Length: 201
Image (cartoon, rainbow, N blue to C red; front, side, top):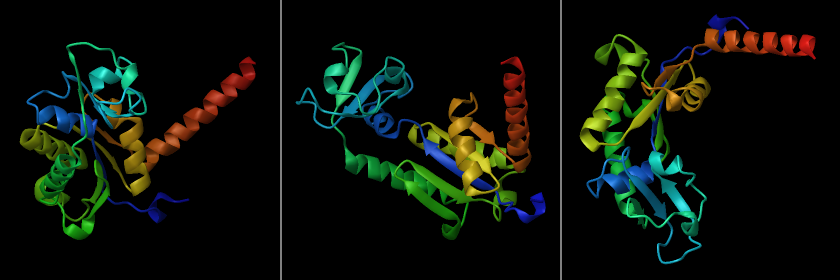
């Protein structure tokens, strides 16, 4: 298919890093990126499920779906109950920050901690490139909330989401931009790799 026939919008998918655990950290005056904190369904039940964990705790193997009894009993690990009212309030506030950059019809809340915007019409008002706009938005979110966000950019919803999950979340900058050419190039590389594997077998 010719690239000219494909949608070519400026779609940005923004995801809040370890949202529940991060909000629970911030409201306690803790830095989510330097704190070991787990949000569990009920801190009084040893079999209670972990709903969220900060990045440092995830590195120790505690993640969503783990149980309270899996968490080491250490002074540097905080275990807290969820606060849905606070999470919803934080989510709504973040949405209000993002809505400064796009019209309401170009905003779509995918979940409490993830959203999409179509910045095609408003990009020129705030930045010279999609990457610059994405950085501007996630920097403002951090400045106003102390919560870390990542952003994937693409010409359609799918590529924005894929660039978020497969690159932005693991990038030092927190931002990734995937274009159609990147996908075609990746596809060709995968074919070449398959051919090499076959010849070596």
